[in-house]
Length: 250
Length: 306
Image 1 (tube, rainbow over the protein chains, first blue to last red):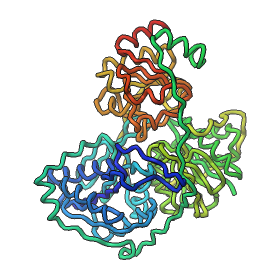
Image 2 (cartoon, rainbow over the protein chains, first blue to last red):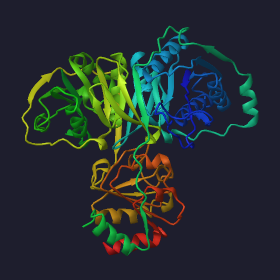
Image 3 (cartoon, one colour):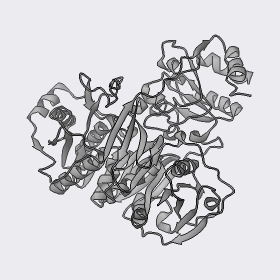
């Protein structure tokens, strides 16, 4: 079984982002980037499938600028076998990402495609279902458990009321939620090994995809700030404030 | 042109989030139609929503568990008759709408929090730390709606037309089972008061204290990611960037440090209370009322005083 994993390079989750003064976007110069945490979970899951003898090859793919090579090296460090960078400096929106990944999937014919359930920069949470649709494959989104058995992916999904289990005949697309696994720490020897693994570079044009954006961002602004509150000294004072000042408890 | 809202059904009942999506739909111009796809569905409650002009009912076994593949097949021929197709940005909407959008060659717009014009919307990015105003160049718009940003539409008093349409065939995915959290408490995303616990509670047992507090207040229970990861409570209680978005009148955060990912899910609450023994905890930066105290002393005192 061949597994394709998509990884996005995003502003690190610990960075407190700043909106640019001209309202054109978010400041990304001199900011730490890393792999989207959900995608890292997807890579870890793919590598575990390989270690368990279920997967034969794990291919990591990323779309983005030259620096996305670092993101792919990290995926190779976790244990992916090879990587593909679809290089572009342009803004690539989820539909275009899905089209590019579809073209890559058609070249590689994976039995399973794993991706994060959302990227923590644009929070769109669209690529997984879009890719599944374009490839006409079943989808298992928000996976907190994944088992491969008898040519199917059995996915436990985190849904609003609890958990739901689906069985998807392979090939299928699965998006990962937080509790699927905890990605490993990449050891120095594995980091060194990752440097020697093959990485192919393509462009959206090589894949025959027009990645033009459909959405125009008119402005980006900071949300209204909550006004600073007060500290209360005791439970009694807290209750008094909630009853008389805020009026939220009767 | 009309606007189509895809209803989400929980045990045959319309989910509260759908009523919020209906309100967003009324801001787009045109009649609002509601698609009710399920198995053995009763269209009467949907037809009673005054803002809805027409209810489309697709009743079939393939729609019993709201799987994305048959729902997409059902929606695909319907969508081009509408200017907008939308659903609430719940697990249901996030699973379905991008799949539909891709097949329509439309760039979907996720979790809108405001309608500026029929083609222009506001949506949060970076865990709500920035708000983007985006304009779509697609003819048809496919949207998901952040429920807390729009009031719930009235549920009674209307008399919409009901039209039955053929359900889709079953898709390749097979529903195996589900384990839904049973609770007599209000639903987390629509509760007037939410009591939420974090890692500071230290275990599943101390969470029971939180339940006593919730019982006294008629509140729903929420949790931080740390508390869910540690196994104190089930996943569906998680509030935050990747969990549920809530905006109750009162949010009481107990033993929650206030990571930006958590704050993203509750910062639109009307009143926020934080109880934490670490006075440097970032949760105090968003709290209207902060109590620096050991929760194991403060909680019993609070419960007793109510």
